[in-house]
Length: 187
Image 1: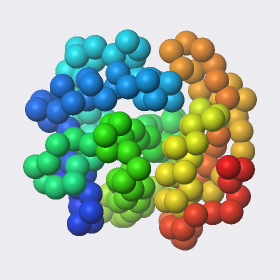
Image 2: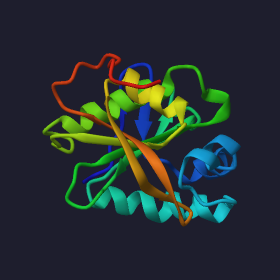
Image 3: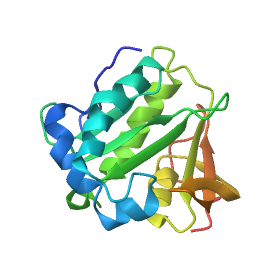
Image 4: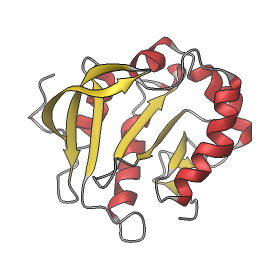
């Protein structure tokens, strides 16, 4: 898949570039990102260099895009959103937002835009998108809920975080699901 940029007028999603490396490094050292994601900890600049230079291009080649979240085409990186392959199952969406960009609706807008792309025949052409977050990650759950994901339950020891199994909340989104908050969420 060729990398591409998406925009809805509120957010612009574009592949991260070398100029984003220091911003990614700083953001991924944030305590909340370290606590709720699987990024390396401690997060080093070399991790961001590898992410931008190797991981993201390889994911695009395999059809699983990662984008920088921006508020304009050439604006600074405010976060990341993208998809992870989970075997033969549906792709799983993941995202984080830098501390100074939180509580602005950027994550929800980015997730909606990325999901629209994933469902599109000109995009990924998927039939379902999965979401998982460590139990207790209320911020991520709020974004998923507002993007229309439907809560499906808890997977005990459903994901490893730096070698430790943790319970995860599980939700899914189908192409015809309304993009409004679902009422199945326990939070």
